Length: 326
Image 1 (cartoon, helix red, strand yellow):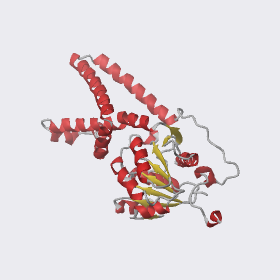
Image 2: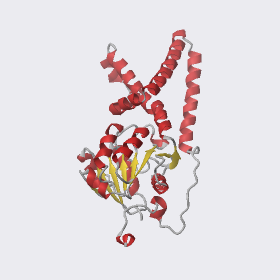
Image 3: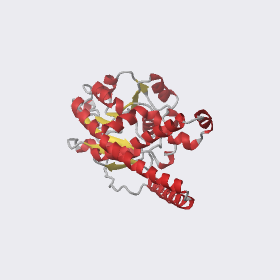
Image 4: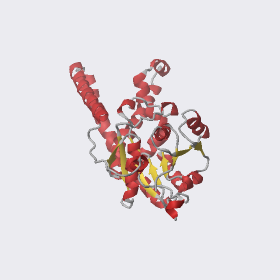
């Protein structure tokens, strides 16, 4: 068997980029999309030419797809799994790309009557980290090239399903990286949840200040980029309360750093403050270089001799044709 139909639920920047990557691949796949805003789904199909067709029916899409990709916010994940749970086919692979994995695994076990669930997160390539747009105008077929494709399968997931998930990530141009679901959720608190809460604090502080309208009139790139996470405020709130202890630990750590910076400013020690900022900038540049080189992931690529290109990338997985069933 091999995959023939890929369904994508959620067609923001991530979902549209995945659709583009599939259409730019050497595979011949039928890509079907669904989004709660049907106008956006039609835009992905007609303007980006990244979909073969769109559908309003989640159960219908689940019943048709060999691989079902969920790129919905974590606030919509449980409802989505519940909506498709009865209709996912026995052979189908469900790739959940939301930002909260431990709950995703539990919800999948609760709602999916059949099929194979793997928690995944495609990480943006280093070249696109400064572009915080979530609209489909920012969709790119190479959005995940030379980055990592995080995989968090449950212990019950069949090895063949995991292999197919690995190869799906490679199809996006990313390198597979296995991580524990609970560990991933903890790490996300520091790099996703806290930036969202800091964006809220910064914007609110300026908004409450005397003459804030004048300040916002002159606010430029640093302020716009720092407050960008507010566009996903509902998801940030959900993530923050998912593990309140972890969120509070990160907030305490951040406030301790801010108190130290405040002391340096109060003391007027420009030389020390400048040295600290330069050192942190060096560390940030090193991080960006490591992200672009992508050398921290080590996993051997399996070889599949005698297989077609589609079988190499997606594995012998998908809907059985009539010859298979005979």
